[in-house]
Image (tube, rainbow, N blue to C red):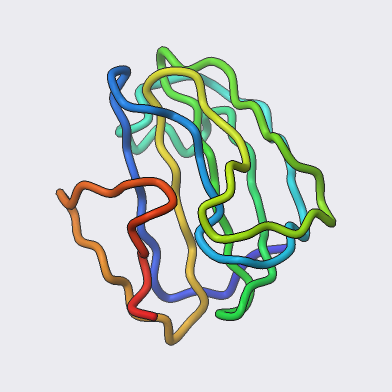
Length: 130
C-alpha cells in the first residue's frame, strides 16, 4: 500500500532529541511493515536504503504514510502498535534509538504547515493546515 500524495515532509532528529514518535491524527493503524536495510546517516540521500518501518493510518484526511528511518547511530526502530489499533492524535506509536528521520506523506490536496528548519514538538505541532 502506498499513499498517493503530492506533499511530503520529513523530520530529522539528532542524538540529543527525544525519539518517541506520535500519531499525527486520530485514526486507525492500517499497516506496520518493517523493511531491513543499511545504516547510513539519515540526512543523506543514500538513507533511502536504510532500515525502516512504514506505517499507514486511516485518518480524517485520508491515508497518511509515516516512515521511521534508522540512521548511522540509530540501529533500532521499535513500533509500539500493531495494525488495527485505533490511535488518538499525539499518542505514542513507536520510537527510533538515537539520531534518525521520520518522513510523512500526506494525501493530495492537504496543505503542509511546516517548512524546512522549523522545530516541531511531537503530539503538539500539526504538519497540515487543518
